Image (cartoon, rainbow, N blue to C red):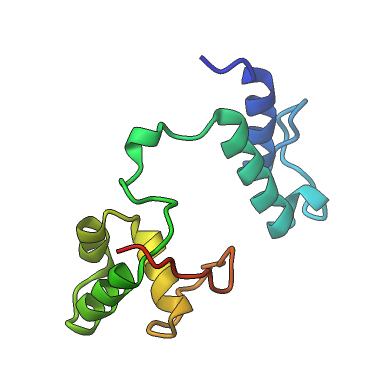
Length: 126
């Protein structure tokens, strides 16, 4: 059970464009309607709610990419395999697959994709 229910309700109202106290719509010029501010509030809301259980994430989520793994990613992509299928095979998220393909210059970034890191190193593990 989350102990931050009041804070969560406040953030949810802000994301919905409502005054968190009165519930009325925020003024159109309100800084809380700025897309960057809304995105920051959504991120804060995710953090306050808590992260999903580790078991919900793919097995290799957050682990360094090996050269062999990148080679398999590139080969499957060049064979026309969809990112979701590659993700299942490599035990990564679809977002991780797309981000790595963009970082490698093999795919144009989809609208809204923001990479945390321009290009992270490749480990030597196999």
